[in-house]
Length: 223
Image 1 (tube, rainbow, N blue to C red):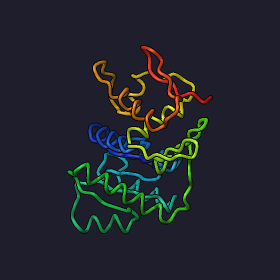
Image 2: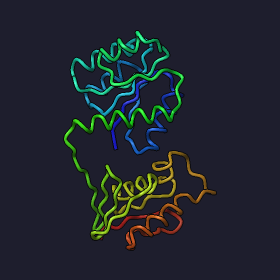
Image 3: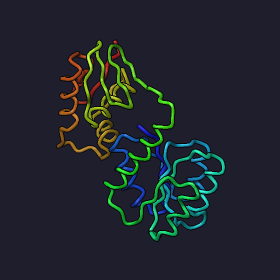
Image 4: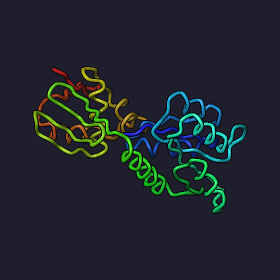
């Protein structure tokens, strides 16, 4: 999945957008200040920047211009309450790849993010990244699971859960940790979503590599 930087001075909006993107499997970094966001984008260029236009201090127009001046291929999606045609044309001519007026529906934002990332993929050389632990291989871009030459397609949650377990192979992951990292919310002792998702993963893996650690959580074993 993609790395995305969200720059917006409204903390609630920032959290809302970040969680929606994380639920899609993206790695999200946030900044509530234009200057901080610009520094992050220059030092660690993400696949996509989602940029609020009107911010105190260093505003979105400055960030857009400064970032494009250094990284000419930066992909920037602008969010703004300024929705007139002139503003949109100005920003697109300045190098933004898309513009979405506020207020917006989160489904539309996610659709535009997917489209802009797909556009980028058509021009970038594909890099296949595969996680491997023992006989288990996971393609991080296609969410395809391969075990001993047999392939299975994972749902988004199954993919996120398996990826986390593979990245922490041989370490015990508590249910609290998995719920926070994969589902994005605090532990609820009444929920069994982790256990249900692990059961589905085990069915697709068809091999005993996920060990239950009684009263704690789960461990993906490398050997």
